Length: 238
Image 1 (cartoon, rainbow, N blue to C red):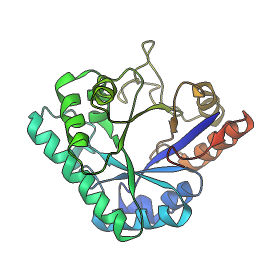
Image 2 (cartoon, rainbow, N blue to C red; image 1 turned 135 degrees about the vertical axis):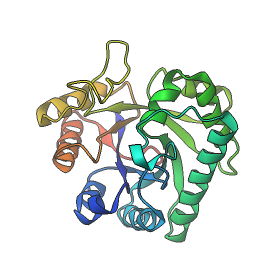
Image 3 (cartoon, rainbow, N blue to C red; image 1 turned 90 degrees about the vertical axis):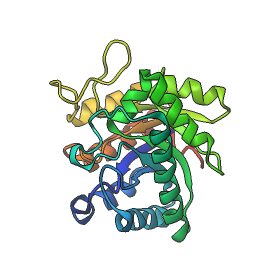
Image 4 (tube, rainbow, N blue to C red; image 1 turned 60 degrees about the vertical axis):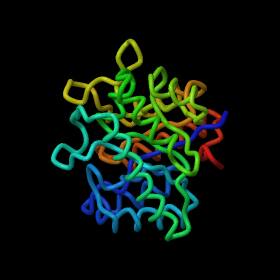
């Protein structure tokens, strides 16, 4: 059974200089690279893309609300046209940066509050899909199973991929427990690895957040558990 392992990367210089992004790139098969809207900058995007290319790790555009003060984790009620233009601009920037170091952006993953909003927010889901539809090159949309955005993308002929989270708690209806609530973030290595294996067969990609405590150890444990379960761990576009 094939499964992708991804992490959100290129989100700030301190995390890069700590070595954790580099260490994670040695474990994951896909890198969701921040496009500079809620964190990071163009120099960090380039460095992250270059490191991903060197390791054969797939590059995805991690798009989000232009809100650096709140790390993109606060809902913004942006007009549809503005949101579409913002997402297109972010993807285009990463596409140019990745291309400058021999890489290619192959998928798009919304970040934080935007990711959760387009699970149920019809208007913003349409705006995000409209951005992908307006690109010169087709990219797949990564999202939570049952997301309104994925249904809209499917109807527009845009490839989609289901994502699960090894280090996040779920509600009974399959949504993510809000980060502000106790227990939203899973940090126990065994629990995270077990949840990753439980996701096999239900999603195309499993995420471990780079800002989770002990993220590198968690990612290694997840990869080991998936391999032990007989999974073929590789990027979605491999």
